[in-house]
Image 1 (cartoon, rainbow, N blue to C red):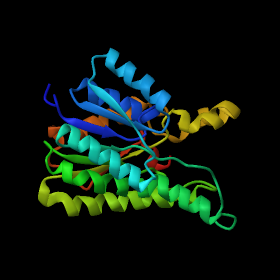
Image 2 (cartoon, rainbow, N blue to C red):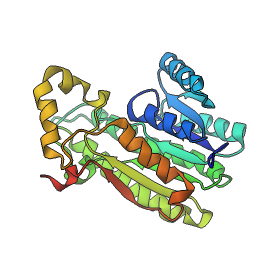
Image 3 (cartoon, rainbow, N blue to C red):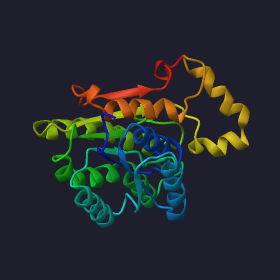
Image 4 (cartoon, one colour):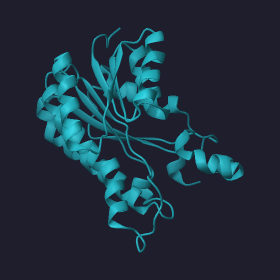
Length: 253
């Protein structure tokens, strides 16, 4: 395998797109370190991957906690001698709030989860990425970064727009070291992110496919395949890009 022995960290990897990404990278030869906050779930996921013959480990820490992020990323980097790929998958809506009613605490929690986490993990990983093979950082933006999000999701959209800008800024900053930085922007992907509306208003959830050019919702595998490409040598001349993975949803049909 071309990627055999390369080390990848995937944050928020105990479910959904993050876990699918960890599995995909693992099947392509990466040593994968899964991050999450639920240690019990993390242990189960690692066991699943090991049963597939994937070399993996779990690192339980909150990506919004600066000191914990630094501590664990440095530990991982020192353990393996390098980091080859950092996938900043962790993020989320947190909740919905219009700006007029939005508390400062809510604002900070959304920005911490979606933006601060990318900064903390990337900063800590850079010294070890410099030692990596085809080193790269892959971030997650969102359609909301362009549309500013739906009702009550404005600050989520703001945080994802900031990730888009940080991706390009990191790419400029790290190009001299051969470290590439890109992002993916998933459209509507059928994961637990949409679990509430899927269970309470299934007809509304199903109707979302009508606004997607390819006529279906996305699957975690649709995203993990693109990430695996961006992590590979095949993408060695791609940096500072954000790839839309939405089946044409961005066209707003």
